[in-house]
Length: 371
Image (tube, rainbow, N blue to C red):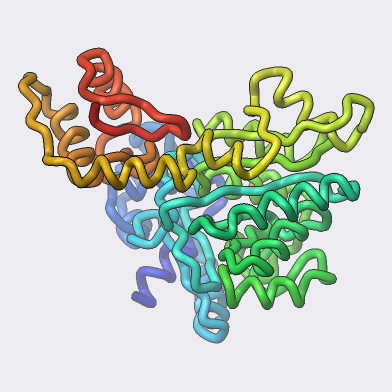
């Protein structure tokens, strides 16, 4: 395992090899060590790699940095999550630019059934604070994991509210796990570690530099079922996260605000341009996501019914989807991608055909169930 981790960390350090290239190479070679042992000529001729990247891989010699990182990981009981690890956040797998390697310190299940990301401005108003606290308080009866970015403002309020109401929360960081930014949130980060966790793609000794925050935001957007923007100006990280969420086919929601309030300008913009659904409360959100107690109980009653037989011819992909739905009655699209082992396009095609044949129906929150 030590040897595997050495090459996994090293792969993220190779110049000119980004996450997309790293994942493509892992898909071909199966593990990081085999990539480094591949012949240069073989890498040269690989689509998307080419001579420059092949040379970067073969010339890489900074394994000592990876060795030091392993010592840090072992000392602080950090869990490394490589792209093909069983406990890697599965929702991220459907994002083309998801990190090849993550570092995690915590106890929450990153693949739990319901995950939302709550984001917003660093300079929140009292309105934003009250809305955020009430929104998360009203989720306390649900088994929902709250993700945010540990920044000042709405992020901090969301994390604190989750802790207060016994919901697990994940803080995604724009730096290594050897530091906390902003430093004023060190105590909060410690509490989060005990009731959720800290997650980052950056090795230790990485500073919270400006360019790291958009990278952090893509994890916030990619590892959840839905992004909720509480309060935001028209420019900033929250809008980036919302745009990323849309690009990743996530459900995006926004709390509206006064039309002349700059702190609500971003939320109003998202709603006006159909980039986010308008919600006024947690009740709205739960119903639109099909997560409300009433709708959930209906699904549970439905699962008790005798399994139906389908008198229709299905192709191989459609049969895989139907078999999965027969086992658990309804399923969210990201989980369906993962369980089926099919490409996103193959799943989309199968679902379309099944809906046209009245075999499957779609529910709010990108949830599917048999008719």
